Length: 225
Ligand code: SAH
Image (tube, rainbow, N blue to C red):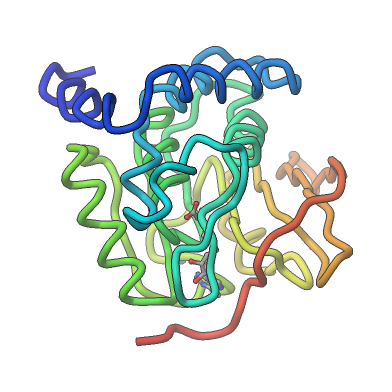
């Protein structure tokens, strides 16, 4: 990692105790997350910079927190789990993220893959996420204000696609935009009944794995100013 970037990330440390952060990593490890690279990135990413100051003291709890506009910053466990699933078969160069939100998952991903393309429908959330990533000197991310149901066709195909809101069905556009061997990690369902799924584009068609119950805010329709 570039020295400058390392310094920027380190600056966040100290604002909340190092011990609290270590405790989170220990907890994720005990819950079965074993990708050392993912855990290390979570350790050094200052999650408290992605929530309101009033909530900063809770930033290293393993829970989702409100970020305004009825949205939440994803739970660290889920960020780690989805990142692990994406990377399970090896490194990725192009990853599409649907639902930038606070930009926290984006920041984690940007340190694990070559390039991230991130789509968000709420303009103000996107603007704030952009600022945070610039502040952390994470430069390999491109943002788009738009509707995630459509993916980002102009830059397709992607080796990985991650959706951080629950979809009633798997969006066809996202399947279309997966490269051969590409991996899509997506919560599917509605309300209380949601399952995390891993879908892989095989030589012929797609394979699907259901990975267990999850809880996400809904993938909505259309961009919002
Ligand atoms: N990973 C984010 C999670 C944000 S919550 C974080 O850790 O902060 C889910 C996000 O998906 C919200 O910001 C919401 O506005 C966005 N979203 C919902 N429907 C969408 C759609 N159709 N297209 C793009 N973004 C969408």
